Length: 126
Figure 1: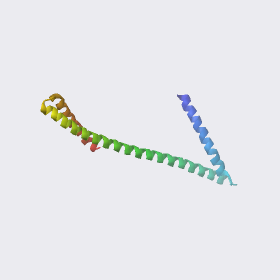
Figure 2: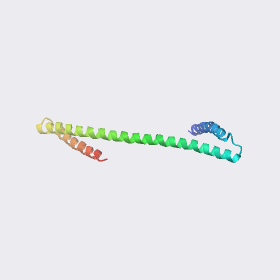
Figure 3: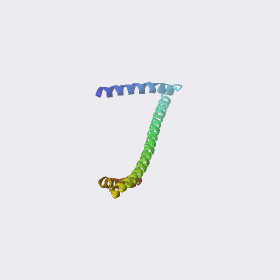
Figure 4: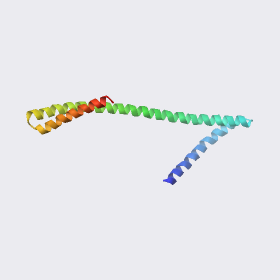
């Protein structure tokens, strides 16, 4: 585990150096003064890091927006399914219980319908 983390860090540093070296060289070109070169290099690196930060933030914000949208979709699906099943369980359970065909199973279905209706109410208010 430690070796794989170390290897991943080495690969990351190689990629970072590979990306940063041309940026530094490009920023330093055309400057005669060392202070101007340092300012250009620092500005270029800051711009590069800001672009990475902004891109990462955009990806995270998009993922969070998609996750919220998906949870709302699931909430609606569970709410609608609970409502439909509560009605069906209530009708079938009431028929079985009141007709005497299977009173125990009918009573359990009616209780299940009540619990599903309560679940639908709770989900609707989340």
